[in-house]
Amino acid sequence: MPGITVADQILTGVVACWHAKQLGGAAAKIGDLRRKHEIAPPRTDGPDEFIRALRAQQNCLEFGVTFEIVLWLAGIFGHQVPAAVLGAIFVYSREQYFNGYIQDAEKRIKPFWMGIRALKGLFAVAILGLVNTALVHYAGINVPNMIKDKLF
Amino acid sequence: MPGITVADQILTGVVACWHAKQLGGAAAKIGDLRRKHEIAPPRTDGPDEFIRALRAQQNCLEFGVTFEIVLWLAGIFGHQVPAAVLGAIFVYSREQYFNGYIQDAEKRIKPFWMGIRALKGLFAVAILGLVNTALVHYAGINVPNMIKDKLF
Amino acid sequence: MPGITVADQILTGVVACWHAKQLGGAAAKIGDLRRKHEIAPPRTDGPDEFIRALRAQQNCLEFGVTFEIVLWLAGIFGHQVPAAVLGAIFVYSREQYFNGYIQDAEKRIKPFWMGIRALKGLFAVAILGLVNTALVHYAGINVPNMIKDKLF
Image 1 (cartoon, rainbow over the protein chains, first blue to last red):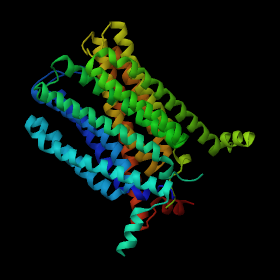
Image 2: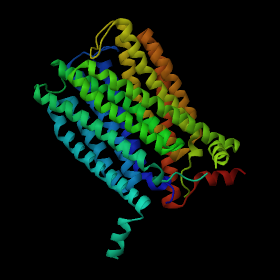
Image 3: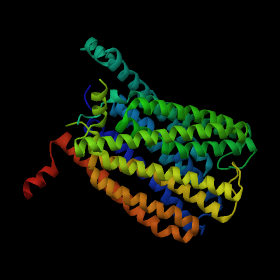
Image 4: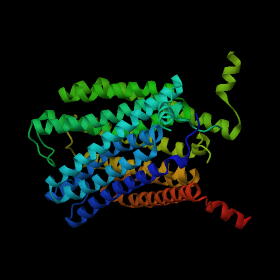
């Protein structure tokens, strides 16, 4: 089985980089709101806008860890194209989630569920990729090649 | 030195996938408790059960980041078998921790320390793996091969 | 394009291992302060020292996720040497940040900004690495080799 090459994961890498920038941007936004409302760390109470932003950031962190795991499993064991497409949908949905939540708690709901669907898709690609890799390696059965042979 | 192949990390990947599912499940449980006790986001106060669940999730997130780092270092620089075994013990202990903590703060203690032991084991495998890789690459000394030659 | 080998990422791995140890150490410090001030989980209120430590840990977690993403993108798509140097500066700055913050909220500021600069450097290396990999793979243009040929 050939080694993993960096060229196989360029798209996954671009999406991960965008995600890292988003998490950094969320932290910067909290800093801005701390200055705007004069809330010095380590205080975490404040006006509703600040409370919502803190929760939005925390939620992005929670889901961000799960996302990075399945993004890379999907990209490496599955294929970078579905991983990067679903990953980009996830990061975009989280952009809408974070900005929406700061304005109004209701506005977080729609992008939240869009993100969940993208995450479920990544789980599916990751699991299919793991199963396929195991079949090739342990049983010598290559289902994708068998499908290609049938079709072409 | 040969490249890393996906086949070498199937077991590590399966454990990481289980861990990602666990973190997603913890977030879903918080959502269920929010609905049960009618606690609309961004509120974080509520009955004891909800407070305990929030802390349990936060603790799983904190340890989850450390875990993913050492799981993959152990798997890639060391070997996937000890990494996946210790990783599975960790994820299992965290399952017990999260469910126990929600019922009663005391019930978090035993699985917590089981998880810590698994994490320390992963650190050991990661460090041994890094040292071995450095010895092979920079000094041309392959300790595992020397041991094999002595034994067989 | 050749596969990624473990030898290419020893330094990145050492820095990631140090970072994992730091995150584990921060969690242990919170445990120590809980015992010192007799604050049983799931409580999160307490004396100022404890509140500052909790925030310091939370901030290290937030930035730790972003850091791990760009550290590995920089190491794998760029090169392990700049990734590990900037990574070591980041982890060192976070050591100062965490210990400083627990003593006095003011003492967190200088190391915080040192960490931000290291993180921006890692983003730069990650992006340059991704662009270079894409140019080599999709356009057959190898800028580093062109520079080497000009110089030597």
